[in-house]
Image (cartoon, rainbow, N blue to C red; front, side, top):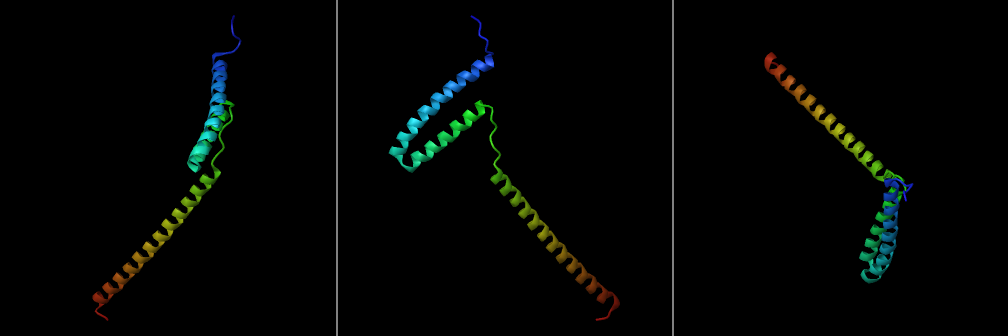
Length: 115
């Protein structure tokens, strides 16, 4: 009469049943779509399968893996941007220092009257 499962467990069981059914149907549909639509159908099938596996992993309590390649690429891009900004800053400061030195030299010539 009374169920020993909690509402969360019943919901998880129901979600698992729905997911299993959807994965089976997606596999059948993907096979048919790949046969009819060629590469586009295969791309769709791969994406559907990837999403279904991600949902199954989430229901099983497994966390998705970190996108290490993307994180590494982002870090390298940040390092390159920082290096470029620092190099540009050094170039600007060197140019400003040279202009100041030239202005001081011109001012010294005018004040002293030598030249």
